[in-house]
Image (cartoon, rainbow, N blue to C red; front, side):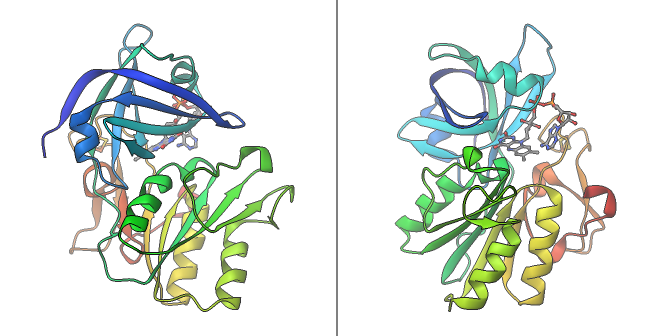
Length: 261
Ligand SMILES: Cc1cc2nc3c(=O)[nH]c(=O)nc-3n(C[C@H](O)[C@H](O)[C@H](O)COP(=O)(O)OP(=O)(O)OC[C@H]3O[C@@H](n4cnc5c(N)ncnc54)[C@H](O)[C@@H]3O)c2cc1C
Ligand code: FES
């Protein structure tokens, strides 16, 4: 796989929910290589702060354009939201591993919290092309923050009860799984660590295959700075790096600690 490290042209930016945007940029080289679950590192601004690099999951690919989805949080995302078609951003990728969508399972059960929804439109599309059905559980603070595009069989849970299940997304998942006969499920989850921990527990209790896409502070994104360790008991090692061995992990291999919550 050839890494791309280049200034690339922004082709579109769109607000898709409250404080949530998609941004597309052009790169036939990256579009041809990136797989669901992988991410890129964006040099958000060279001018304001040279080291303002942030990792973003790939949310979809359209011909030679790649898309990311982000929600406004701090400095980096506020600068990104100001980008306009024709501007350039520094992009390094592809980074990280892919979701295990080639494994043997009957139904993909997607569990997303907040902006953790970002990698799933692309995963859903690739699974659809392979003829694998998807059911999606999306937790959001409120209905205004729900992203719907590119997702299938969507079940929404909101913290304020403004849409769907009133409560957290694991409640919606548990209710559905108890009342439906889901063919050989495999869970794919991305979101805040407390949600990932609860998903991990649910998957273990019900003996369901499960992958978690983890977030971590990242400086280099390529295994150099050693700044993104996670405790892990796969492959006989105690610690592994989220940026190179992940960000997608088998939930049985990950050990969460209280400070992750
Ligand atoms: C593999 C990977 C994939 C990611 N994919 C996406 C994605 O697809 N979309 C997306 O919006 N973000 C994604 N992130 C997070 C992203 O890299 C940035 O951290 C995030 O956008 C905030 O950047 P910022 O510069 O706006 O905020 P900053 O100025 O860095 O932070 C503002 C405040 O928010 C806190 N903070 C920073 N990051 C997070 C976080 N992730 N969760 C909670 N608090 C945080 C900081 O501690 C600080 O207090 C991903 C992270 C990783 C590691
Ligand atoms: S971010 Fe540098 S090693 Fe992972």
